[in-house]
Length: 137
Image: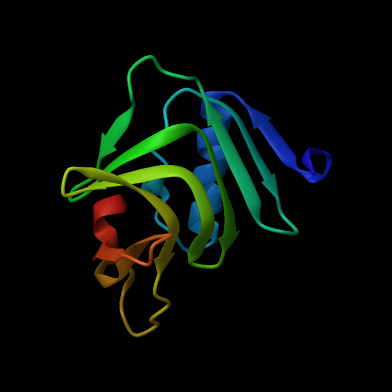
């Protein structure tokens, strides 16, 4: 599978490529907050992506406006327009508990301007939380 992929090495190029990719599919580029990315890849025909970052001795967390997020050493997902599916390696903190996220999407409502749209985070258990997209820009 890796033979069909566009593979990038190094933090700077991986961040640039994945930030561009997120904006191309209609998601806010602020979703990518990983540090020290070693490798990233994208298989365009199936939408599969992965990011590998250096393993830290201390858990790396990022806090957005209303949500705390933790990234595993490897993050994988399938990308579609306005949606990240089958997400692995990302957890969000809710009520002092870390919960694995499985999907992130923006409702494709043409009547709303971009800043007033909501982004929804969904778990494999079916729980979800929607926040203003402006928190991730």
